[in-house]
Length: 52
Image 1 (tube, rainbow, N blue to C red):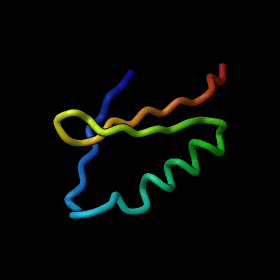
Image 2: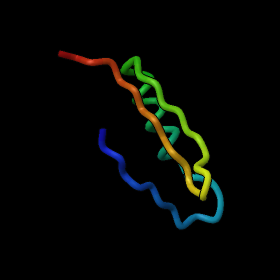
Image 3: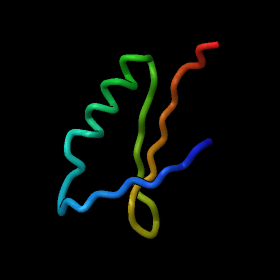
Image 4: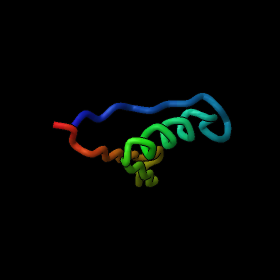
């Protein structure tokens, strides 16, 4: 699994990026979820079906 940091300098919101990501992921029968981290920030989980 690859973990990448997500950072924004915006005071509020994340803009349209997460909305676009969700649309793409769900169009491919995937799933995205987010949760708050204990010491700040957020953790995102993305699951996509295996295409082997």
